[in-house]
Image (tube, rainbow, N blue to C red; front, side, top):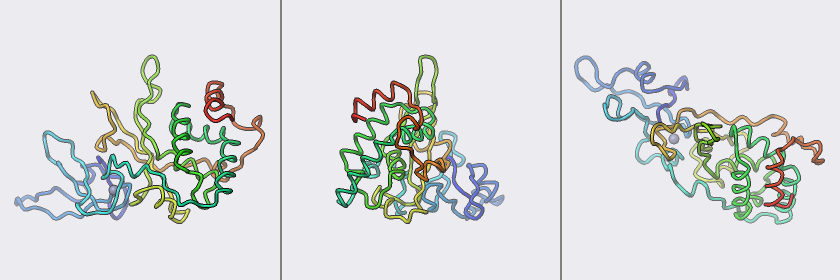
Length: 255
Ligand SMILES: [Zn+2]
């Protein structure tokens, strides 16, 4: 990661900012300086600055060996994206699923707003995946709790249009904390469940999401009315979705 947090002020620091705060690695007499670690923006564990004065590599903040789980560390860890709900009440799961699809325009709208240009194909495929893996079975899950989990289940690469990009960066959504999977996330008290929207740059020939290409990691702020689940069940009073989106959802889920 190119940035981390100052351990006292929680300000975002890049390599230069870290040196400004804590000094250079070596003092004027050539002695190594013991500087405090910074904090990872995702899991809040200690991280140290590596390749600080390397000519070949970009300085980046790295976790200590033996530290607890962090999605930045286990960067391509498949388990992070697994859904393993404890089989809850099947009737509740059925109601939750029905409620979600009865109000899908709200979820699509919020999905698209948070991603900044989503495709209906990504919405359909992540929902099909979640559907197959029993997302509706999480205990006490409410309809407005589904979307945050959905967002963590896939990567959102840059989105091209005929010339240039609709969105020229990639996205991955991460749980805040040392949360290793959806079960752990779901077991947290509700006020501790947060998501980070990690933005990835694709310089030059980069084709994949790489943790040292993260350029921003803001928290996801869901719309207040969305979180309060103020949903109208009449489709005519729901947010308008493009015809292409409506047709794709009808084909995939018969809604
Ligand atoms: Zn971390």
